[in-house]
Every structure is written in structure tokens, then in C-alpha cells.
Length: 256
Image (cartoon, rainbow, N blue to C red; front, side):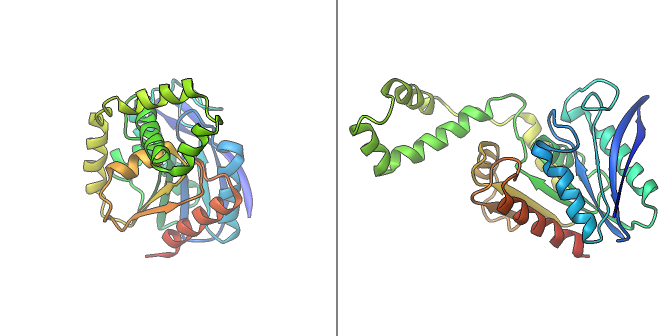
């Protein structure tokens, strides 16, 4: 296994990428999300790429325009389709032996893959897709969180024992009672985009992530592509969560 840094053009800007080389004919494209650089939170994407390459699957990750070392302006995930296309083309050019690519994106990177109907990838791993135009998803997730807390006897006992800040708790209850925000137009576009993709899909939800909880609550529960790692936080940074994510990605990488 070897790690190489390279650049590729996207509409006049140079984007920076890293490839962990391997001989396998199926590769992993790690799509950038939010404001995170290609190494990922706490280096999780870099570790994931190295582990996949060690198993024989080349892995490519990149900074989209305006993020990390890449040139240009950061216009958000809905305007990053060209970055995705450029990264996939660069991956195939750098690893010409590839005949299949699995794309993995977390949060709004998953949303981008859905909007772009995979963007030319052959299989998709979608982690905690972001379904709102603004930060309105966070209050909705908090409502669900506190509803569950209030249903538990332990929460009521904590209040009676004086272990809970009543002012803060009251604010949380008021927030919970507000109407839930409506999903944005982008959420409907994501559903339509994914419906046009005919390859294998895994929708991977972190059980302790509010974005994931929001998505899971709005998605058909009978969808067999939906899987949850109960103890995982948003970026799957815990060792056991990363191992779970790796197993799900390997299943896609090894399938045909």
C-alpha cells in the first residue's frame, strides 16, 4: 500500500486529493462533507482509507473547492456536483485498473450523492444524510430526544431528586412543544435522486447522532437498506463504530 497526494481541476480551480493505492478492481471514493478536510474528523477518513487499501481496495479522498488545501469558493453541498464528478474522474484516471467504485459520504456528502444519483459511482454508502437547508434539523432532533427522556421514569426521578436544572428543563420542554420544521425542498430532491440510482445502497445511521435520528424518523422504516449502529456518534469515530462502518463498506466493496 502507498499513499500519494495529487490535484485535479474543477471549473478552473485545483482540488487536492489523496489516494491510498491497492491492486483491487473495486475502489472506495470518500466524499467530503461540510467544512471537513479530507482526513475527516479526528483523521477517521484517513484511517478508513488506509484500512481499505490494506484489504486490497484503493481509496480516494479529496477536499472540495474552498475546503482544506483546495482552491475556489465553498458554495455548499448542493453546488458540489462538479467536485464529485472531478474526483471520480481523477480516481479512475489515477487507478485505471478500476472497473467499479463505491462512494461513501457522511452528512451533507451523503445528501450530495443522493442529489446526484450517485454521481457515476456504482454503489453508495450514505451516512446520516442531511435533509434540511438550514440548522432547523437540530431543534427537531432535540424534541425527539426530550420526548424520549420524559417518557422514562429515571428522568422524572432525577427532577424529584433535584439533579436537573429546572430552568433548562423548562426551556427544553417549551422547545419540544414547538411545531416540527417541515423538510426542505432538497429532501424531496434527495429522495428523487436516489430513486434514479439502480446500484447497491447502504444507508448507515449513527444511533447517537441527531442528524441521523432526524433522517431515520423521516425515512420509510421498512427500507432494508437502512442500518443503524446504536452506539455510534455522527462521524463513527469510536473504534467499535469505525469497525461497524468498515464492515458495511466491505460488504459493498466485495459485492457485484
